[in-house]
Image (cartoon, rainbow, N blue to C red):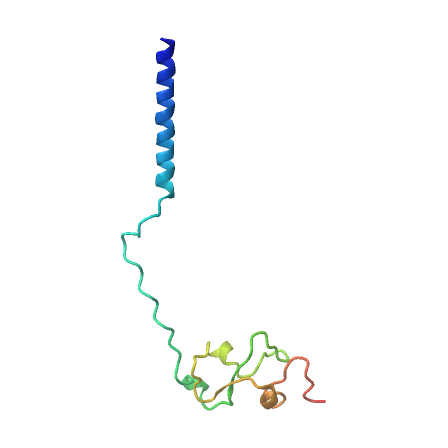
Length: 117
């Protein structure tokens, strides 16, 4: 009888171990692809090919570098990003990237530059 109890205990332990190992194998198996379709790629952002009507006829619109600051309290003049939005790969007529040699103290008073001295 003692031998039967030991055999039963051993078989029970073996079955339990086999079940645990089978569960681990299932949980580490790679998951199949989801049954639903993947979303379509988002369309490319469209940029305006020209300035809005209200912005046409003004001085040149400038695209300032990130972190650029102008002196005074009114911010940087003709700031394309602030008033119109992000520029596209092709700039509309009347829009330029900020160039200190061309724009400082003519169109822009950068913070820390004395344009009136």
